[in-house]
Length: 184
Image (cartoon, rainbow, N blue to C red):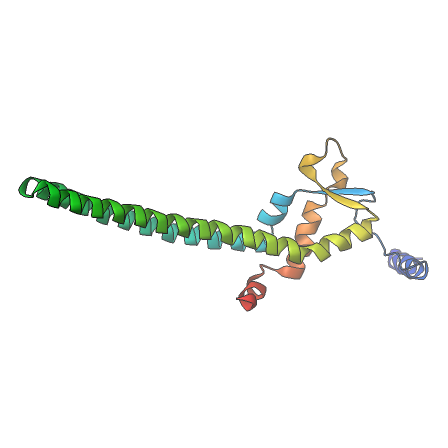
């Protein structure tokens, strides 16, 4: 019997014996491990999100530099005008300028928080959408759990399914752009 025929026969036998799935290339272990950070960052989904966050961050950085230059110019103008102004008038302008600076800082900090939240939301969406893939790997391996690799004291490298999970998630989700865009 050829290898292909043997594999087919085993698959049929597994299907007849309670629906157990054929397990090729998977560790046969009760406990598997995954590296969550790597799972996200090396997936097509994670790489796309990282590019988007970097682009948003670059826009914010450029905006911050422009605002900083404008405020610096305004501050220099105010400083030059000080000697020709009454102290009370100058104090009113200086207080207004300080208020403007504080409000600008609050707005820009909020934009940074929103960008950070985008990343956290994307990670949550990634985990939610990749869960069925991880569950399938777990079933195929006959495992009862998948643990975070960093919290495992000792395990066989074969128990780490991160690379396999990335490949399968990429095959199912791609970079996730169309799924996420349809939710917006």
